[in-house]
Length: 123
View 1 (tube, rainbow, N blue to C red):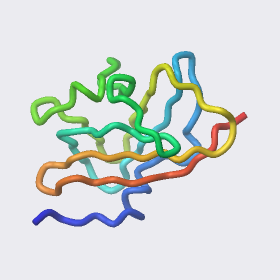
View 2 (view 1 turned 180 degrees about the vertical axis):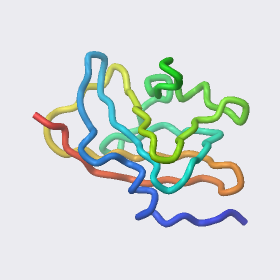
View 3 (view 1 turned 90 degrees about the horizontal axis):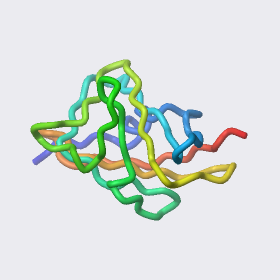
View 4 (view 1 turned 90 degrees about the vertical axis):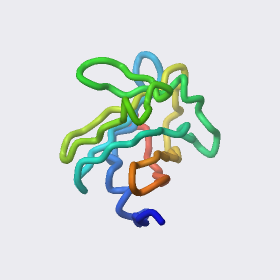
């Protein structure tokens, strides 16, 4: 049986106030203060309760964009301790105001972890 990580701890990974639109869609930051982690699978993000196709979701790794679909046990999503990672969603722009994001992933030895956060797009 896997380890259970409380949702309130997982929510601390989200960088509050980082949600914003960019030239190709929107983005937000994750910053892991809990300890380095490696996800062997990323699930589709949810935005205001609607699933965002994994093909539209990316993160930066060593200056290169990596699509959520490319994450595997051989190519994990790494969230190093105390280092911010930016998540980009292409083709979706957000209206000003509050939005609910859902984030889920599989961590080796722990299993599926997921959490929701609500943040506002700055004007």
